[in-house]
Image (tube, rainbow, N blue to C red; front, side, top):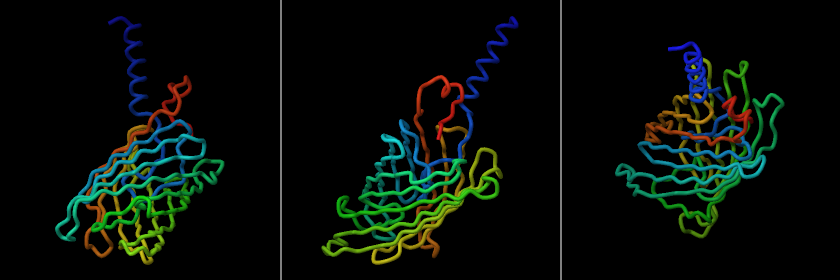
Length: 262
């Protein structure tokens, strides 16, 4: 093979490797984790999340339609559970996320959620939740630690069911969720652990999830997790998930860097 052909082959190989294994980003969405971080995806970006597990399957779409805003559509299909006498049922939520503040290093920030339908973190396996009778909100703050080796997400919130269990009476709940993301121990992989639940008239037992999230590039992020209640009475179980991010802009700098600009 001639030298110019070898150089061209090497150049093409570098381009392919860059596309497949571009720069990793720690600014990622919740995936099958209940907690989220402060990041609102850039204007023009779409996110698609698919999760399948022992308790339920989920599908989440988000779209950065307006600067500093992200709009979500989420559906959850819960499998039949004979132990809890829970039938197979479907829940959904529509919500928006707004970026309130981001630091100059873009490693920390605060965002707020507002939605209706089934709130993340409130898992009831025996009832169908009416979309227009459930409202929820949450605030998320991300704290970077140890030179960005650890990202700690705090996500308190609240929810109301205006027709709780068909009683025509309102019920309230305080939701809490916190997640630790540890980087640099495993190449291109985050070790993730979280705890979440609901207190109040609307109650869900405290649950935890632990898992690994592989981050080879900005666009395809797989993860595997295991979840249970703190009492060990049953939670999400094993789950696998996949996040797909669409390109932000098709422009020369984007193609060269293969990196979403946050």
